[in-house]
Length: 459
Image (cartoon, rainbow, N blue to C red; front, side, top):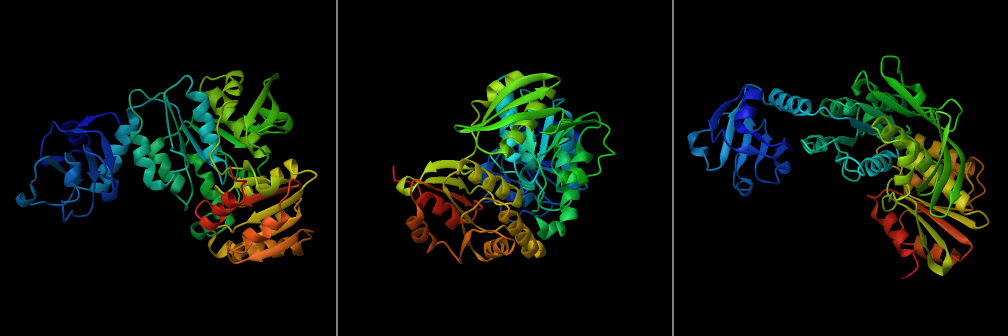
């Protein structure tokens, strides 16, 4: 954070100094008590702080509030700024802080691929620029303030994820970041417990169109059907399409699986660039295309981006390949579980498992609300179109996928379990050097990601 004095902050907020010092310097910000973790933090709170004992270790502390505090609550190294409306004061602070930096900011949304695309962009840009970004995949709406305050005078560009838990989430993120470049990786089905319908979820993702600077850039996957359903007529900036079709601004040609990753040729403005990106699957190609397009808008040409991507390191548990028991191959894809990421994982299983017995071990999807049964049924239809020999499901939701896959014509041998206890012994009997296993689940479902570890060869 760019340091600010209490005096400066009071002027921004038109606040009154109730106690403390105008000379106190603020280095961090928070709008919840649990976010106060360091000294010299400014806390915006609409509630009364009853006990200061747990906060004293973080003094000097600056509190912005509309509440009245008595003289008995005057403590050393505690500064209180009184304002008429705490909520309005908070947003005035956010608006002022963002206005101090005229830098490019990339906002990324999508059902899957957000974190990978963000990391690719960060990796490319960090060779030449000072970058701040979302940490790993921690893209909660409660983290926006901390990420915004991560920008300071040395920051040359920023890359943030804008996730959707409910309608309005991306609009709210836009109030913090004011992005100049937006990216939609793809749109599947997720977070329907709050978005209620797939159409509302698509609209919620489409909010990114409204938060990009009018003279900015929107980068989309041209082959994603749901992205095409977003009304982009109101966007006055530049739209860049990436994909495999001839009409794309950034087109991937001659896509091939290589050792440890994907090879393809990038065609951009009649020029061709050879690209290698670590990590298996065509979805990695789309992520790389979006990253290269964003980097080019920020002054890094495609040739340099391609060179940087060769040393990119993807997240753990994202289609990582391990040697398994009895010489088998294990694909650990237990980072997240959505219909789009599952389809990508199954395609990788089919491609690198040619000539082998292909086993898919699947957990269920979460955050689907009343649509859970329907989405798992539709996902079962998708599974039936994939090349799987043995299908093992864990949990009731995953059972729906498995049963519907068989009903939809899958020839896979189906095994369904309530938990993973019996799965290990079943799979161990199947494993040999001619077997490959995809383990797909959510990082928060412990028994699924632990299963991936149990099936690895002992090293």
